[in-house]
Length: 184
Image 1 (cartoon, rainbow, N blue to C red):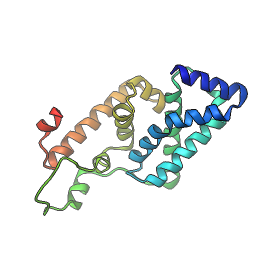
Image 2 (spheres, rainbow, N blue to C red; image 1 turned 45 degrees about the horizontal axis):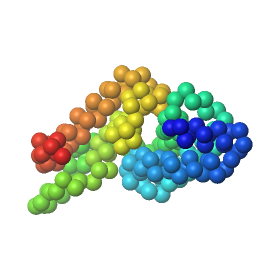
Image 3 (tube, rainbow, N blue to C red; image 1 turned 30 degrees about the horizontal axis):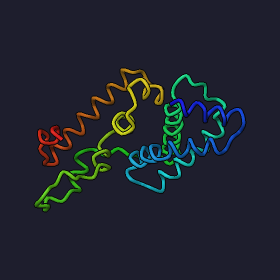
Image 4 (tube, rainbow, N blue to C red; image 1 turned 120 degrees about the vertical axis):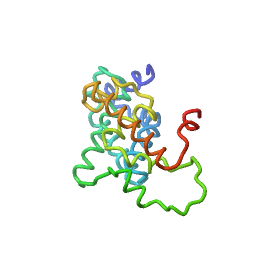
């Protein structure tokens, strides 16, 4: 974004904290939303990781070279923060479809399609979930996601394909009519 370039140059050249605060205002919601979904709805952890992301962005903004958009650079930092967190805590965010089905109540007589999005995301592997969120929620291209995750474009496409397949299967196994879903 043209406005980003101006703000970034003010931050790099003059150490302008107000310009950086404006960047935070512009990207805080997308970064928090990204973390909210990656952390299975853990809002506090998402806020902490977002704060860590912006601190790292502030400390390293001089290294931004505009080889990609600022949002791509920022989401790369965010992805690394999440990856470092999961590595340090050794938490596993992957859940298989059968685990979710076993915990679901069979006594629910009425199912609405307002299923919990975070529950659906739990069936995806970490990389699949990250790709799906960046592609569908943040509207980033496959090439941008490849830069963020330091993966080949083909790998990103594979994660996207597998993620869509798993979510479609989950929706079908949960008793929802996938033909009606696709019409929405």
